[in-house]
Length: 270
Image (cartoon, rainbow, N blue to C red):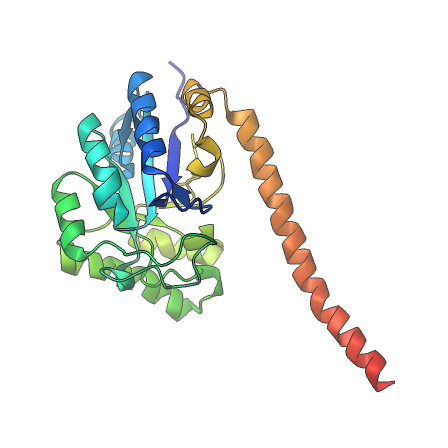
């Protein structure tokens, strides 16, 4: 039998704000029911990695659920639904903000300030079978850090999890999906696997460059069903190309801006 790609889904906050990183709790509940009704199970990245290590391929009829940032609403809104279906998930936590709020940057429009899981809540989730991974210490874009700072973000977050939870975290999610060759190499020193934000399923990617599918694109249950059936790859490709084009446009605009300012300054001095 031919090896099958694995879908790794990305969630952030479960709330009704309508922000780009939010999923309404009722929508999440419907999605989990859809996964179960289609004969799939939702698992953690750790479970998927162990299956791959044993059988040299990803598990079939499974999706990996990941939650970035470690919002406290995972404890209140997501976990009870997962428990009902006997599902698991991976929560990537920002260890320097545990018990605090999402104030590492201005939150997306509409989201506002929300509480982050406490270490006590994280410990309860861990005992219940939820994997806790790293989302660094302070949610910085690792590409913009010095080598020392990047190392501290990764090794420090790993040490925090070990100290507070008594486990060795296996996985990392790069903040903002930010990764380059140095960051990729550094992540491999501290974690078994690391997730990006590249919008597609995975089959044979390096474990430190695992793509994920943001559930912003799966709010329609029909699209989720198509993903489970393996019929959504073309849609994801179009969306991925669109995201890349937007990033390139923003980068080009940023590069042009200083030139305009310099030209304007020069015209004033002439």
